[in-house]
Image 1 (cartoon, rainbow, N blue to C red):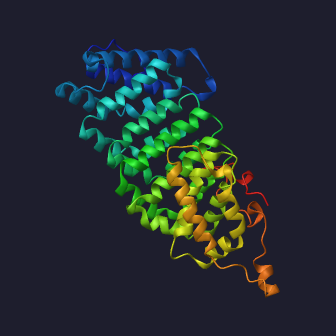
Image 2: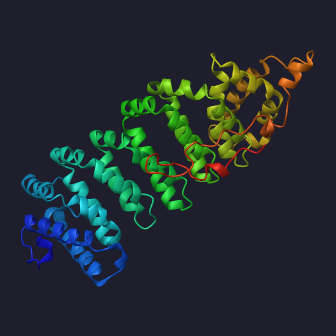
Image 3: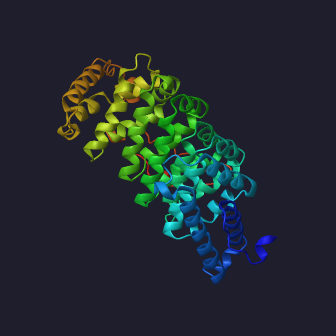
Length: 390
């Protein structure tokens, strides 16, 4: 293996990529238990130097990788990348690179992705690359680089489709529920970009994974984290408003567990959370084809729901306030139009016994996948502790 022998100083772009692969493979072969060894530091330094030299040689005139590159130069660089498979050991060892080298990794990926053959090449490596990147996306030290590379890949529909079809995609939900604020927000931005960029692709994804996606997004809404909760509500509202996602919308508003969860968010201390939850709750109420179980819950909580909708706490100060008030009045009238509980029959009265809103229904069942596993990555391991009060 050539990396066991000293490397000559590379001069051409092809030689630089070849040397980059050799040094990246050296990092691969250093045992993890060796820690921050001299060999690892030395190899990482060489990788950083080579990335900087490649950047200067390939796109130095534009100061970054966003300008149109020289076609011949790009083709030569890309072909060497394909032949060496350097992208795999390079991304696998991002953890050991310094800040500038990590930035160069992102630019390197963006640069070679300017060629369609690179997209085709990466499709054949996606089952190796995406699990690496998705795991790194949850690592505080390197989540930014990993998410940036994932976003570069996801700008190409073919690669985005492959990511959404892999099991590791569901790791996004666990990373979003992370206690590290930056990890959570970066992962959510990446997930949101993926789901918004290709509506048709997203619609097919939701149709294939309706039940599990509902459990994942509801798990984030159950989260204690303000950012995860609010962003999940807003993403959910965006998705169910899309005409292409009509099947997913019908499944969600037919879900008793989802209704209970959204109703509980109407009592949140945050006015913003209340507002975002109301945007979804009004769809449950306005649905002309409610399941009987859904209607029963709304009837049992009729008085409490009206009180909540009349509460000043649910009046958020925002530009949409006038429209919001009109919608609240419509929803309130709709709820008031539901039949009252039949108090003439004691049996029915027990069946429709009223309670405070947060106790008027049992909590949603625990997410059935409450821990990460290789066979079923868990998007929100803390969901068990985030139950609706009883």
